[in-house]
Image 1 (cartoon, helix red, strand yellow):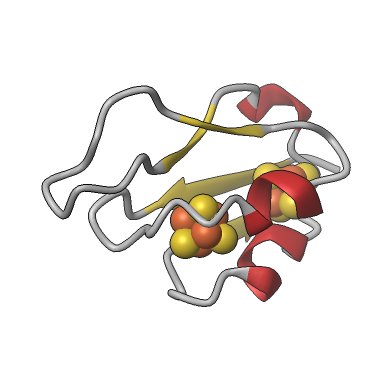
Image 2 (cartoon, helix red, strand yellow):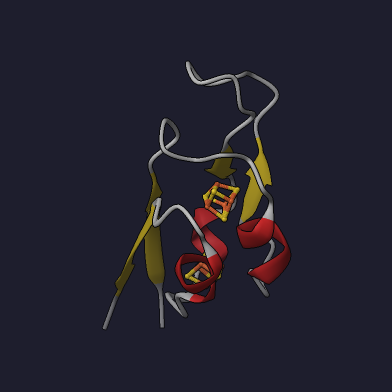
Length: 70
Ligand code: SF4
Ligand code: SF4
């Protein structure tokens, strides 16, 4: 089962909850600030994503959308 996520980097506050929640290590924190002055999360290993949505569930900013493949 494959999944895909989209992180809204401008809404992200860089709390890292999604990084810690992802069991597949898909997400990391970028080294470049967003326009609001936060280091945002980014999906760097999307091919590992299962679509479990744990990242989206823990995100306090509702900045992550998840799609689950068939
Ligand atoms: S949907 Fe699951 S596997 Fe994919 S990035 Fe989010 S927590 Fe990780
Ligand atoms: S949980 Fe949400 S706000 Fe926190 S780093 Fe991840 S995407 Fe950004």
